[in-house]
Image 1 (cartoon, rainbow, N blue to C red):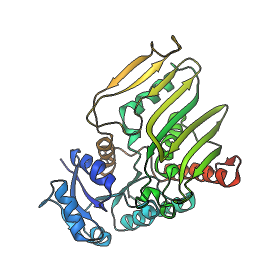
Image 2 (cartoon, rainbow, N blue to C red; image 1 turned 135 degrees about the horizontal axis):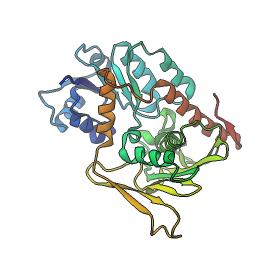
Image 3 (cartoon, rainbow, N blue to C red; image 1 turned 120 degrees about the vertical axis):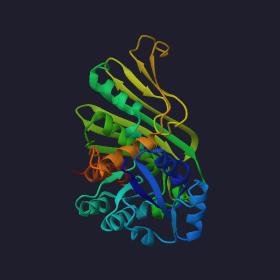
Image 4 (cartoon, helix red, strand yellow; image 1 turned 180 degrees about the vertical axis):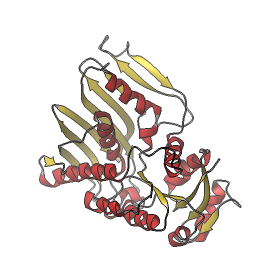
Length: 337
């Protein structure tokens, strides 16, 4: 079986804990190199994953990208470097799976339209590959919920460490970039359309300057709306709910679904006000990051193209742009086409 040979750009924690181990579980993948700002850090990362003697360590991103034996790279560097390193990797002939959000604004994301022909690119929204998301969308499309009218989401955690990249405003830190992007993606995925305008209420940390609490309403037109709250300084919580005229679906752990435990959705037709008569659909344990890697590899190997690429990433950034514009203006902001 032909495999995609991966290089990992940086020793970021998300890669160490989640994505690289998941890539290693993919039958279509092998990790052959890791780069960091020092070769020692790359070596430590390789050792932590049990890859000593099997993967090469590089002390710079440029050295890894110059390696002709690498087919694709995973790019989890801080947000402000996503586009520059993705372009650099693609121009070196590497396919790119890049962490979200793809850019700091849509204008920057539009630079990705200059990717060389034949390069496979994907923004790493692993949730779109999880069976619970696919099943929720299937139910919504089936008509069981009646007309899907609203989507509601919550995603929060507590983190005040100023050295963490998520709390550094000048390089793309803050809750909307880090976790607000998930309910935005969910609403676009489930409505299968783009919002027309956004309004946001945002509270910023007076010292870190990051958005630590935000509540957002997205108008999709035709009476369709999505709303969510995200926070980097609240108790950890996550939920996603689809509201229709005849029923609702609730994804219980929508974003950080555990890879080693079953997950579930609730399908509630309103038979009891407390939801006690809702139908529970259970999904066997699966690693959504591995499913993402598999889908990416199939595209690289020419077996099946990806459903989402550069244009989807740009559309996503246009929604985030409107949210930040609403914060600045204190009113509704249009999502620019």
